[in-house]
Amino acid sequence: MAVPSPRCSPVNLAFQLVLEDAWEVHDAALPSARFAKRMRLVDMPVTSITAFVNVSTPAKALSAAALQRREEHVPDPHNCEGCNRSRVIDTRQATAVCARCGESDMYNVIDASFREGTSLHTAYLYIEDHLKRFSARETTLIEDDVLESIRTELRKRVYDDASFKDVSQDEVRIILKRLSLSALYNHSTRIWTLITGNQPPSLSETQENDLVTMFAMLQTSFERNKPKERRNMLSYSYVLKQCALLLGYDEIAAAFKLLKSKEKIQFQDQVWKLICADLGWRYIRSMP
Image 1 (cartoon, rainbow, N blue to C red):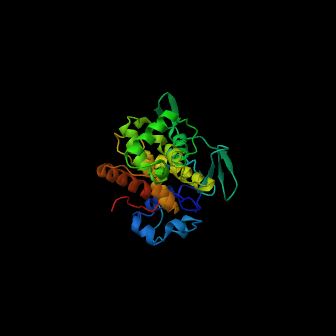
Image 2: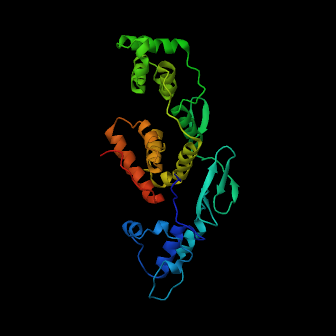
Image 3: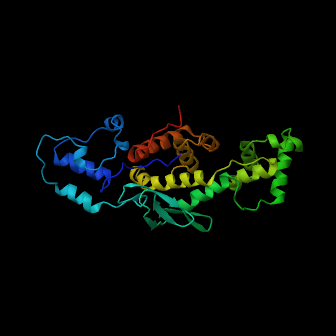
């Protein structure tokens, strides 16, 4: 399934700028989100603004504020400026390619970064690392004594060696906490596969690229809609779960765990709802 586009197709300027300018010129109010959805504006091939706006009043010159909006507009690197369509991000070649006209540009990873241990990662690279850990494709060495300690704890929980295959990832995390090995939480999928012999969740190359592309798309919107005092991204598992649901990858979405705190989940839902409205994505609440 294709990655949802955050813009309409195709106009020369960013659609939101075109729409704002047109309504200002003709002294009209911007349409509500409900109206835009019912009219399926996101799916309409708009070739000119006059094909979109019915006017009965003479046009007037743009205001200084509108001109400044154009002046300060920063092109979205995830969209082709000529076609105003989402580009396909090739993470291996570090390029962004328009599927319509074929124009290709170098693609730089997201600037926002954080520090994990002594290594500096970008949020963009970290999401790829997260997906590798999710599908147990990481190369982290898990010491034999750690695995044996976990097996010993499992045997205390009425498991024998033959029934280790029935152990869940949640149980592995509980035991890691009990053994004061919480630092290995991020590697729990790999530990679970080594203990049980079960296959980890699988991601196709297309599915992984779709998730990474969507994550890259929402970075700027998150910065616009997050509380001023917040610096960190939403929970990566939460974001990947929501992106997988939008893409129709339901089995993958089910494998991502939400935080236990209802308050934290509600907060993430609030921010996610703003991001979805900003990008024109369907909002799916994570809590009933």
